[in-house]
Length: 253
Image (cartoon, rainbow, N blue to C red; front, side):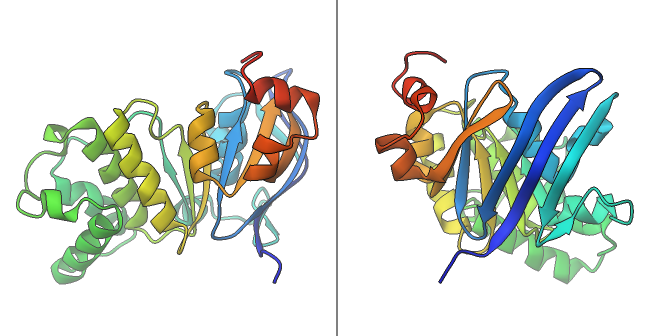
């Protein structure tokens, strides 16, 4: 059975003002898989990731050409409800960014914004999200404590729980473990493997080992162009493009 394509870009160019950051990118990202986007700093990886929840829209002079599709629907169509899109496509950032609220209120924040106020239902959602984020057992007795008291690794898992609480379909992760210690990194990576059962995950990472360990597919972006995309073992063991090989083997980057 062929993989169902959840996300797709067709001939996408992206500009900040006159600066062309992404060049003619076409890619098909399958559902319920982890897709890693690799490439040197400043190559356009994060800009590419943010196409899928229109986070680039908030930047002055941002402009997209081509199509960005979720389930075959162009999300840059004028009829698209951007708030709903960002519920469907959650984002986890490089640096954990919990709100200065309790652990409970961090996770309940999204459902509350979407109009859910029943205490019992919120409690269910919070517990479920924290369990999915492998954090429940560590925090269940201190849900009313400030989220800022958690360790960096716990804060990042809390941000994942906050993302999961609104039941997204896609999770975008922008270097989610780059600020964490090795043990916390391993927990995040194990968590991603569990989450792909339910979600489509796209991760940007500059860490080759991480991409090789966690992803099913890998795309290599260089100077705004998608140089190569395919199953992760193929990209790392048998790259078709010399640039990909040079980057993976550390000749530049």
